Length: 346
Image (cartoon, rainbow, N blue to C red; front, side, top):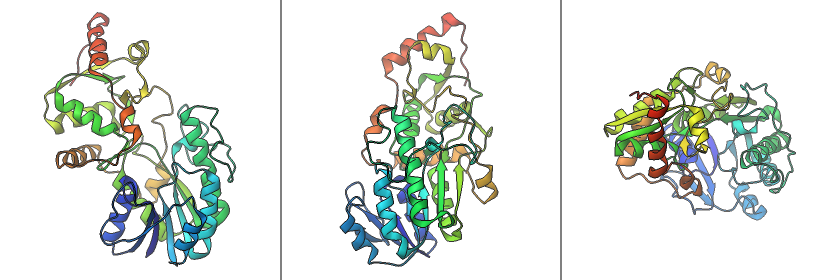
């Protein structure tokens, strides 16, 4: 297999490149060469995907069996469309990594692949959707980009992957690393919501493997990618962080209403905590039936801790600073728990 990887130097893109090389595939990466270092063994072509001339130069290195696009988070649908049209004559199919944010009902409703997508045109510019929330803007841009690739390559040659939260070694967002560092410090730890709350984060390496599997398959379709509903809970996740770090932390569970009363920012201040009914109700049974494997959550936690302990540092990204509650805020909420009759649970 010859694949063209748009991105390839950090987190998901790097995981895709590493797995493809292990399979003995020929990997070409295309990126600006600013955010990370290409893996040894890839053919690295540096350029800006927003520059038509750079894309035209890239196309001269053809042909490829598949394009895998992991780097379009900051690119408007119109730019994705322009790039896909240039690459369409020189690649057999296109695997586009989107997000569950592209669904109109996320995070308020349970989702399947049949759920309605946000309405964004394939040629939308970067201003499209900016009047709403950051989440809705991101979802609109990704939904439009899905349509852009399908317009250029056709539905039969386009595979769309819609993961939820991706964690694992190399994470740049900072969700799991923050919880690991907090568990390492020990002491009472503010644990959000119900310990039995189902969560569905997915390992970056599992998303990468499935993207490669489907690049080889070449049949156009769409998949949600998440851990199975009901397999993992918030207690499983935080207990794994405590056990892995050995910090002697004590989990103290605060109900949703108390956290809301204190103005805790959902999704970021206590990462992975969200009260919306559909946040962790993403049906990925179609992907699992097609061969997607979601490894045990404890393995992801353990391997991420090993990466951090070995000196692993993510690519600098502004979202890292968004995650985590301050020690003073955490202490204030913990002090409010006894008055409400809360008990601790490890």
